[in-house]
Amino acid sequence: MRGANGVVGILRMSVLPRILLTRHSCSKLFVAGLSWDTNEPVLKEAFEKHGEIIEVKVICDRVSGKSRGYGFVKFTSEGEATTALKEMDGQVLDGRQIRLQFAHKE
Image (tube, rainbow, N blue to C red; front, side, top):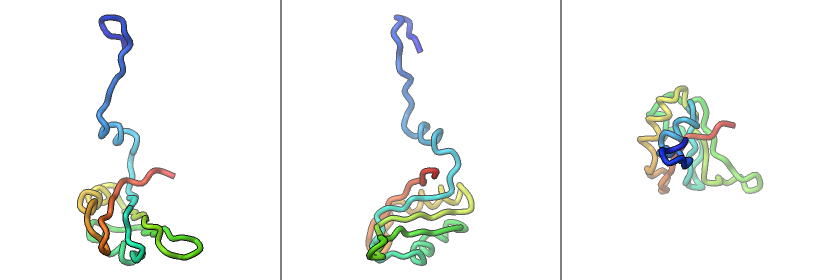
């Protein structure tokens, strides 16, 4: 994009629209900050009040079997996932403050 003085300028976008453009549709949330004691039934119970859940996965260490402190929750719709993200991000679960974001596409 050239300005009036012939200098090429950079089109700047705020972060939010850029995220919305690249994220597309997503009903899967990444949940970080989980307690090592948090398992899949506990995670599901914490999120099911925000909508119908398709899948819950707590990522565990292959050797010890202990939680690695993060997991995923997949809802039936993006709207349910968005509501859960807004309501649950920063909340305390099993004594730990959890952080949520939309999961990246595989």
